Length: 203
Image (cartoon, rainbow, N blue to C red; front, side, top):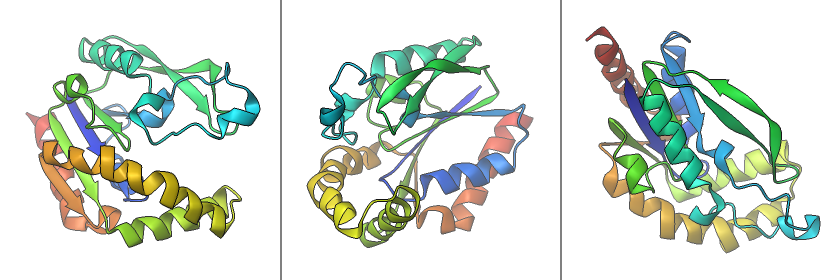
């Protein structure tokens, strides 16, 4: 089994990198484990206060559950992956049944943050991008897909995203075995990653 951790800031192109790698592999060979599925349940928090939760801080994630799930997959056992609703900031009653595969890709802004989880990885990747590019992608995504105003996005970027990135995400770059600049536009890096995975599968 090959466990790959792919980290990077919001808007860095992580999802594109993961998508392009998975497109080259059979569905029976690879499974994706998104960090976003492991946000802590906030159903106990009053609705009006849920928007104040800092989702870019390590404390927002259920690390204990995540560690146990990755460990179970390594042992060849199935897990029930949580389903998180970002509109209500709550964990849903239904889960996603995940079976172990030859390749497990663990992707998220802080995929390289937790030492215990890092130690379970065979390959650690950090997807890097210029801060201006990440900001532009955040604006495009949040304004178009999430109905936020330009002012809202800029305020959140300045108040939360930028300081959290500098404090918790950027420092994890030093743990990476491979740094991918330019995100999903870096065809050479994606090709190298895909070749690495395929060589592991062939071996």
